[in-house]
Image (cartoon, rainbow over all chains, first blue to last red):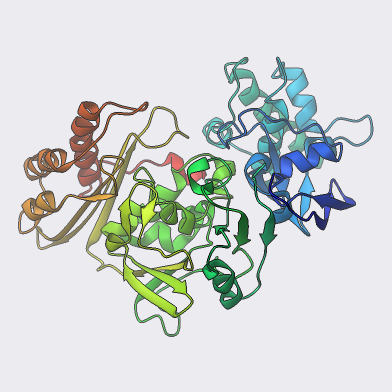
Length: 162
Length: 298
């Protein structure tokens, strides 16, 4: 590493204020891991698989291909921020019910992308779900169950809000 | 982890340009970061990053705005997602700029990657430069001596190479509002939805009284830069927008391609597909084939 000065930064992760000291070249994903948010996974590290998806100021992004310093002042939501205590978020519940997680490595990314989709479109068609999850690579499930889980989650969330 | 020693986040463009122009400092621009963080070719000699996202470059505005004089302005900081979803770009020339942005990469990347970055990276396979080129876009660069505007067609010089000087920031694209009769087409050939184009083709046709009065054909991923197929354009102009004419022009575009073989496709395949993509884009522009719709779920 070239000689550098650490950067002090503030942001919010899952509703909690954070005061981080990061290296200039550290990715947001690395910084999350260093600060014990380990739910978000590193798989390809090149932006191609979306396993590291998080919400950043309300938009879903890949935490592996942005600098931590770029998240200064941002609100970050990771997969750990979805459950309320022991109560899973409906999307997590739907993934469990549908058997949509196998090895589980891509699951946090799929769940966060589903979360982003349902924020924008609470009642998606299957085509919309497939387009929304199109960048999330999974080598186990064959995608049938994650798609089913996303559609199931949409129904559960709609019923809960009625 | 990038091997850099400092990260700068200037609030004013003059400050950013000054940082970038300092000789020997080894500074580069970062915006979306989706190329810079994953492609080592952009990190050669780089020691510091200058984030341009606080410079107010993310706007997309219409030709009727005060001072625009019929020009559409796309800020370099606009994300692919913004470009794909803004109604103005979904409308102009059958929405080909929005379509090319909406078909680029994956939903998460489209919310990070910027229009400026897609051109500034200067990769021949990029999706939005061809649609900007067929609509005669100008690119605005801001450097230590101020702004200069050049045709986007003069911007690219080779793979990952452009006329942009180290102290310059790509700040805007200017697109003259096309005539109402201008129709567009875009066809992207890929293995999977989020992969980089094996070949892409953008066309714009102005069709007046049953005759093509102006034609633009640009191919991506088949030459060191986005390739204007000028002989194919010449074949189209002055003729009717028919399948027979389109086939002739598509064959000509395939002749003009200068593809290479890489892990995505062979040169021979790319050449043949240059014709196929051109034909399909031409059919879209003439209303002989539908535009794809999936990208609207951007």
